[in-house]
Image 1 (cartoon, helix red, strand yellow):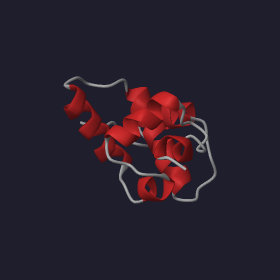
Image 2: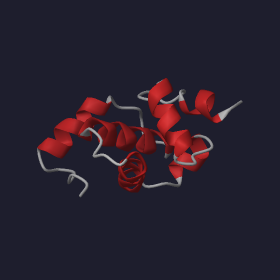
Image 3: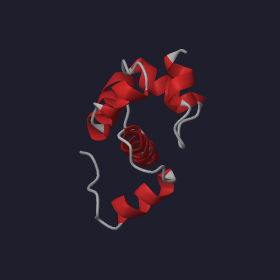
Length: 91
């Protein structure tokens, strides 16, 4: 199974987010579980040369948490937490 297919097993990961993860060197769910979502978001911003939408950060956080064995939760719940100050934005 390739990384794109493996990663898309996660609740919030579709083809585009899987493509971002693969571009960042993620080889599958187990690999994603060992990474930090905020670091991945910063790296994506650096690689693309532009600040990505904060919803991408929320999606990354949701995917990493699920890869680590937590129940899958919609990415927009992470947006609510970030906006409420429960999880800080990435600088």
